[in-house]
Amino acid sequence: MRSGGDVSSPASTAEGHSLGSLDLQAVADGGILPGSSLTSDDTKPVLPEPSPALSTKTEPGVAANTSNVNLSKQDDSPMIDYSRSIWAPVIQHLVSQLRHDAWEARHGSSLALRDLIRLHGESYGMKDNLSESQNQWLRDAFLGSLAAVLLEMLAVDRFGDFVGDQVVAPVREAGSQALASLMRHLDLKSIAAVHSILQHMVLQEWISSKVAEGKGLAISKHIWELRHAGLLGLKYELAVRPDLISGEVPGMDGDESHAYMEGVLRSSLLGLADADDDVRAVSAACLLPIAGVITERLSHEALMKLLDVLWNTFLEETDELNSSIASVMELLSKFAK
Image (tube, rainbow, N blue to C red; front, top):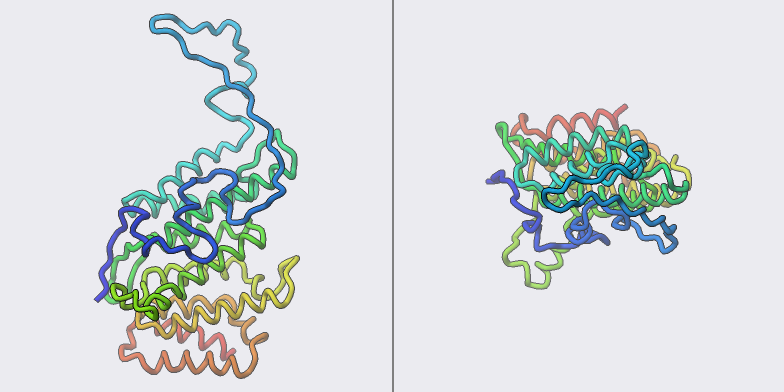
């Protein structure tokens, strides 16, 4: 019997495992600072040193001398950086709330970030006194760091409520949507890193290896909340970036898009075979945005295997009211068209 629960701190993740090539715990601890992006670049441009701020400290009981301060020059203000977007400090505060103990704070911050990234993600982190290449590096660094914090939240979140037999995971849903909005603005290398981490969350290969080595006695099965979060991330990723599968992304060849499709199919087939009904539901929903591309590009044998898995999932259900039934039937109807 599953039980929903909240997570009190990022330390509650499954023994601090590194998901893919990115250690979520280590990367996300740095906050959203330049240099903590998902990718590394040895040729980063040198950013100009900030000009020293005016000192306003005074002795107790002595009024500050402001006669020599030019108040018309806003760039000299020690409190506000007018060369950056006004939304930058708002986004930084929202990111800090993604680690809050209360699920309401994490949920609300994710929803706000989803819309702010959608509207301002293209220029996030940029400054008006830098060159185009410097601003491009700043944007990629800030967005990559933000993706790391969102992935950390998805990995450690265990909050879930239940309406009948169906799980409601508002934090994972909102976090996946915010991550999808972010992937509209990430470069291909960072998108590949995020995609790989989401797949690791679904596959959870480190648990299988521990059980095989006799070290997984305390972990008898995969963490369904983590698999659920990874599939939600893939679902919304494909909803906003179906071009990753169709091969319409500039700079991406056919082999890369085919590898994306094979990875998504592997994760979805594993989720469809999961014992948890909510995991099966989101696995079927994950393939809905790319059903047309799958029928066009997948081989006949692979397509028949996928249809067999879907029909078996449908036929093995003993309760027609299970949450996965509707998603599986909708996916079957997409393939039948």
